[in-house]
Length: 217
Ligand code: SF4
Image (cartoon, rainbow, N blue to C red):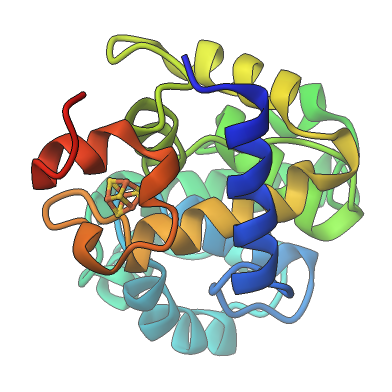
């Protein structure tokens, strides 16, 4: 298990490296944020950013997207993974957003979770990014880092990862830390080839030390 002090040093480093960390998804309003985050599941933000301009041009509101033809939406987002399901989900979520929530993004997680395609991670991202409600979204990057840094065991589930990170991280930093971890995981501590050779926090990371064989751990 990582020491509290080592984790704090990692947070200080991440804050310096990514002082203004935020999502790399492009959006203009809460509706676009919600749809972009739903679309980002198991694909990259870059891929999502390529399809959303046309999607939002044709369907700029929850009402319009909620009444869209699924085949037309599929054509627009066919370059991203799981596009069949995602098309159905964003149409159904938009319809519900329009009819039940009067085009207002819900502020309550339990309401957000009623929207098709919205799971715990999406709800936390949206609540944090749009309403600045402290939440700690756990995606694949966050999970990987928590395991490499020995914050949780390798077989820990998402709930456990979230619980441990929330306990270790000051609440005021939950939203920013999520984004910082995502950026660090996306560009430095990547899944297949983490850049341990140039990593500035290797002294806190036994996984990286072991990988390079530089210390006896
Ligand atoms: S040393 Fe390697 S595994 Fe550890 S945080 Fe840095 S890049 Fe990731």
